[in-house]
Length: 323
Image 1: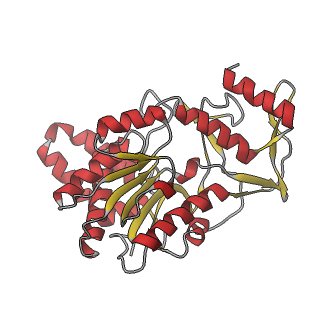
Image 2 (image 1 turned 135 degrees about the vertical axis):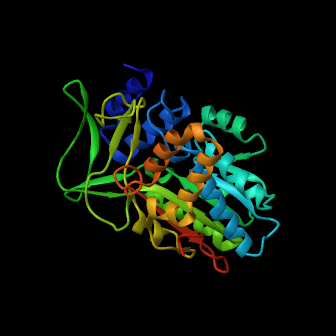
């Protein structure tokens, strides 16, 4: 038993069963603070790690949005939960080529990931919360950020909790599950407040559903495989499907666009043409580029499950492909 699991069990023994929300928050806080979870040696792989094309499409969409907004000189690039910094690096390369010279601001609390981000984006500035971002027009992206924020689970209308039973961790009740996430709602509202006050646009990419629906979507991933939810607390990634309809409601008074699939959005931005250009420049990597493209846009892989939504302020255009 790890020291974290021992402390978690002691907490439950002292205070009684804890909510699913508290369990997920505690586990993910420890998990992300103590490791690099990405890549073949980690537990999962995100779109920016699949191919540079993903970050380039994000950068192109943000650069175009900035240009159509009049190229405001004070605008900054911002990212929530930036992983290894790969997305920021790829997006900013495209944005710099388009004339964007703004600062890069990353919202990240993990010291391990901040160190990796500093290698990829040495000029970036770091913040602990969304509210700490500068009061400036934001060109913001959140890729697989909201899915890791804690959810509450109600089983037949009663808060579901985690307890110790038969020597292990267990849920205290089953039933028809409904998930809500005050943490996600507050994060979306914080982004909206920044955009409404200072201008800008945000692109949210995550896996989930366009419309609010009941169901248990909480899952654990370890070593690129699904794992038992309550096994090895703090040693595996806990996520739940993002409710984009709830995010859009929480993002008022800024304006949220209609939700589209990741595959459709990337196609609209021209990712297939970008793939062909990469292959032309690197014929020996044709198979690798085609495989990455398929993983990003194919409906059986990331193309359908992952959704994209924009949040933009009054006077700013919606990012390309999301209008």
